[in-house]
Image 1 (tube, helix red, strand yellow):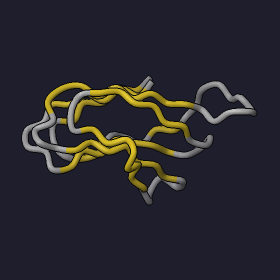
Image 2 (cartoon, helix red, strand yellow):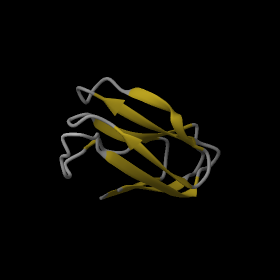
Image 3 (cartoon, helix red, strand yellow):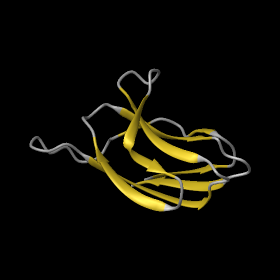
Length: 94
């Protein structure tokens, strides 16, 4: 589990799934978001190389919430907050 606090627009550190490998299924990652958004939008992003990021348009937060996503092994993911004014967010990847 990794936890991050965002107090300004920006991104969390990149993460990569390192848990149990099941040959028949993609790993599932949970995300829990809590705190004050400051009118911002939090988006989950993915990257194959750790430098070019693609936004997940299905997993976007403008208020506290939870979500799950699946991705292939070795793919990086992060949360990015944009358009926020004095936010105080905590993002937990489970």
